[in-house]
Length: 167
Length: 156
Image (cartoon, each protein chain N blue to C red):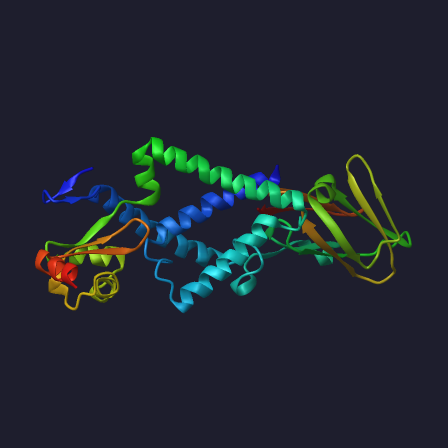
């Protein structure tokens, strides 16, 4: 143990402590940036001005997907799809890529599809509606983590989105 | 497996966050600090346990946290430098009767905090009765009075 002024036994290491103070100050700035990022919606769960609420596709062209860029694992999430009902058939198919049901737990689909089936490529929801256009809301709980590319397709159009699931 | 990873991540995260928030943050808990601590504990609990409320999950979690704590204390014992980085080192705030203002500012302590410890621990009345005031690594301020004051304390 070192001696301070020849009398006080103390393991003071002011160099280490001053490095620590510098690290602390940097960390405070990082914390402030983190809070700012959270306010802007980068950590999921919405944000000021809904900057992270995105739309892909175009409802006029028959398929539009509204989603949040950042979602959180185990926290409720929503994806809203606007699509045109098929004119040639009373049933409209919405096909989603495999990642959709592998990385997201589908809690509820509104309106309820008439039929749901999975294939090698993904999952297909078949809706019986004649309304034009109609929207489908998926209530989801993310299971995985990281980047999640999703493909939505109808008979006429395809839309690809990428969401990020925070841990 | 997920419980172990969650436990480890949260342990390291909490350790870092309290380390960078400074020694004094939660030592002298005011009512507000106490509320803050409760909120942090509750939030951490939710992140740790998730939706799995099984007994096995609690066992895994508690053992993981304790084992991490034991491992770290062993490492700190073996490598002193590692311990100093992790826990910090004591800092002299009042040296031979002189206040070190720059250090006080850095550690967010003021004269009133030093006098509070001086009164509580040594029954001192004035700042000039103190020889050394040291901010210990747990955030406590210890006081060493000047020699004549020491003798008077001993007499009492």
